[in-house]
Image 1 (tube, rainbow, N blue to C red):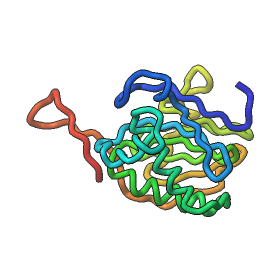
Image 2 (cartoon, rainbow, N blue to C red):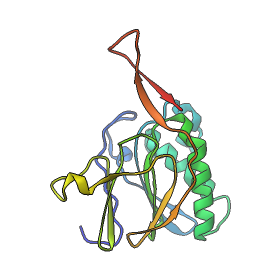
Image 3 (cartoon, rainbow, N blue to C red):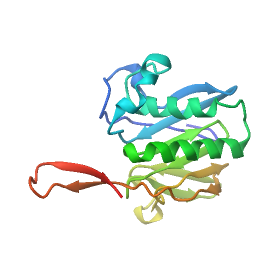
Length: 191
């Protein structure tokens, strides 16, 4: 798949029906730019975003609601400046992160915005002039030891395969903890 910036996503359904409207990546026009979004995770309380089901979302996934939330925040000003985008996306992520696992890839067609708040759930491989992100090391492409875990709880921005921004940690790490009283149940917590 040729291209300077490509986002692909194979969905593991947690919320929402299996239908075309729920297929990642999602695409939206925001401030006269085409944005693309993919999300691996789940929002524990999707009611936080119910407003977007009626207004803008075409499907019924928590992932699309996350994208709608970020899009709404970006549209508050018709500003295509990178500094504005970073500020708005970081603020949106900080507001969303307490509600669930938030691995995301977001692009305005030029820049790639990356975030994870769940340990060992997003990996990075950097080669000459390119970078690849995956939820698991793609060992059929490169050796496992050439992949590294993406640092938690902060926004990263890439341009032409190079890191151009590393944000500050918001501190909302998502993790699953085994429930001691019942070994068949898992509870979700944040620190």
